[in-house]
Amino acid sequence: MNESNQDKKNKIFYPRSRYYGQVKPENLVFDANLQEFPQKVGYITSLETNGKLSPDEAYQQIKSLWK
Image 1 (cartoon, rainbow, N blue to C red):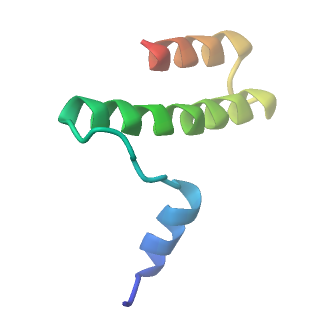
Image 2 (image 1 turned 180 degrees about the horizontal axis):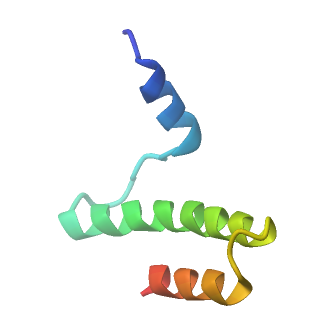
């Protein structure tokens, strides 16, 4: 089982947990989006904290992610 360095990095930076619910396409999509949302919010808030984004820009980006 040889994993490339890129695969190892992806597992660290973009962790995914298993889905234990009823396997339907809409449930899997919802679960994937639900796992991705806090990661993106974390990136946006870090950029805002470090002064790369204004608070208004960060708010708008998070608001658009929520929709």
